[in-house]
Structures are given as C-alpha cells and as structure tokens.
Image 1 (cartoon, rainbow, N blue to C red):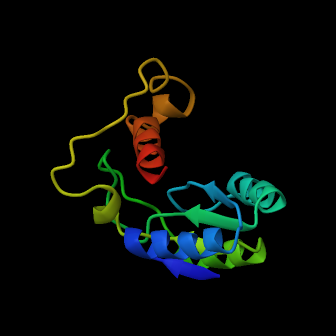
Image 2: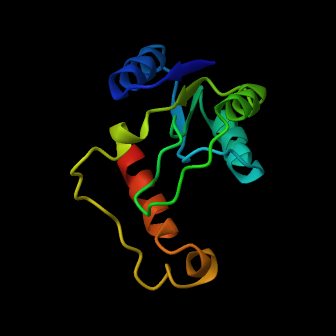
Length: 133
C-alpha cells in the first residue's frame, strides 16, 4: 500500500492508476478507522480497480478545538488488510490551512444524536469530507 502525505503526491498516485485504466474508489475519513469505514473500503474494492482511503496524519486539533485521536500504525495495518491501494494522510495544515474561512454547517443536525454530545463535530466531519472530495 502506498502512502501519500501531500495533495500533489495523492494526485500523482491517482493519475498512475487512471493511466492504467483503473477506476478509483474513495473512502474519506478523518482517521481512527472503524468497521464501518472498512466495509466502505471493501465495497470500493468490489467496484473499483484502485481504492483510496483518507485520514489526517497528525494529532493536532480539529476545527472544533477537540484533539484528533489517531493511531496511524493501527489504521495502516487495517487498510493493508483490506487491500487498500493508497492511504492519503495529510497533516492537519493541509486540510485546514491557517486562515481558512470555508466551513460547512449542518443546521438542524448538529444538535441531535452524536452532534448533541459533540458540539461542532458533525460540522467538522462535513467540512473535512467536502475538502477531501
């Protein structure tokens, strides 16, 4: 499995797969891989010639001020087990550069379910996913 830590590295790796006529399946995560994300990687594998899974490659805070909880070695081992081709592990500054103003707000969702106990978390996930896509 290849690991890309920069956007240019990710683009170059994906371009190689596309040049080889492989479709690319993408599973956006912020890391700390769980069974739900692994099932998405399995589905992507069944439908594509290349599977890319993202994460954030360091332990700094997200946009809510909560620390990222990461175990990169564990995540990579799980992704390797699922035959993922490429892990995209940028540092937080790549996804959330200093002075970044773009944020997604999920009005009406952030005060229910998981959002009720983790203020700002769902907005952060939506923002991260949009930036990754």
